[in-house]
Image (cartoon, rainbow, N blue to C red; front, side, top):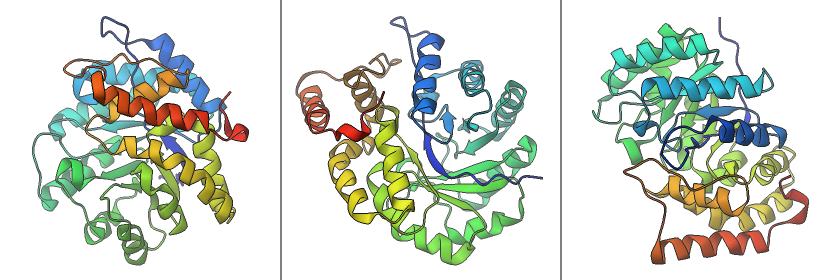
Length: 303
């Protein structure tokens, strides 16, 4: 039986590469340790931010295994499932379970746009095969599949489905989910620049991107909101928001890896066809990051 009640700040971690595009597990161990040591409550490997579409199944399992080893039980490790077929997803899930992950985040196929009947059956099939706690990732903006509150209610009889990452970009969805489903699922917001709003509406956690460069600030925002310290939280969020906008972009990977680099906790290596930012585009993003670093609240600086 699944009794997971995930909450808090779960980074969607970046995959680290050497200059030749091979996986850099040493850099990932260092970065995962940095995140855990700065208070995050879980890690999610192999998501879109982790460049999953460019990784082989074996590479995704290897990244998850590295996170499991670094965590050593300190925080739950979730492996993201975004395979192009349910059949391949089941093969991945088996290998990730063998690697020791604590649960999964389940996305729709990135190629085929499923209808709700197909998407629900895929989610249910993967969760029942995993027999581990699973989070449903809903992101109709990026993936054109929308599992609405009524669909989540249909899936509620599956014991392994314990949480929802909601990224529909409509903050009203958080309240609609809670009103429809009560406390059946833990609710995470998956849009960085809706973090304050979602936590104010009762979300249980943040499944975040910029946290990979700024974990202490992200954890502090969560803690302040949960403590009802709205004014302090709002001041921190207003500082953070220009950075958080960088998550809502087709180049979120390059944006966030540049933020990691300038914050001194990563590098810009990506796997092609992605390329690091250049020219005016890079200058704009770098200005945003450097301006935030210059005004960074001293009490939240990462260590």
